[in-house]
Length: 123
Image 1 (cartoon, rainbow, N blue to C red):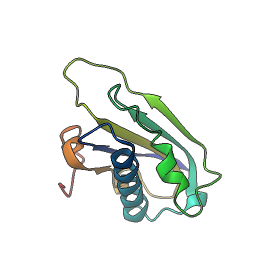
Image 2: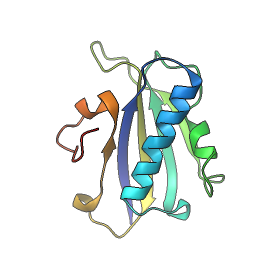
Image 3: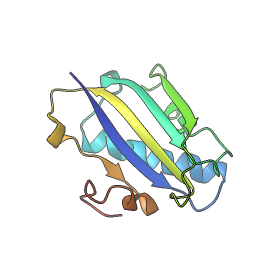
């Protein structure tokens, strides 16, 4: 069956290095905490707030072994007034036998504010 796995992080500045590094750290933790292998991933959507345009965060996934053929799409998040700036969100669709309650959603940096109900280990 397929399940959605959420993650989000933030960066301090609109810089390629920060966008790639924070996306990579987030994605790696999402994979590790949920025992995911590249072949388990159907596709990945990555959104960024309008203030981030220095790099495609999908580039971070291309640096990871096994993710060359995983479809990844980047897009801009809806610009809601007062929403968290400098934010990168990931929605990964995975094939798994885990039930919804067993999925570990991951939030880093300022993004822990987005879903405090899902944050187990505040970073």
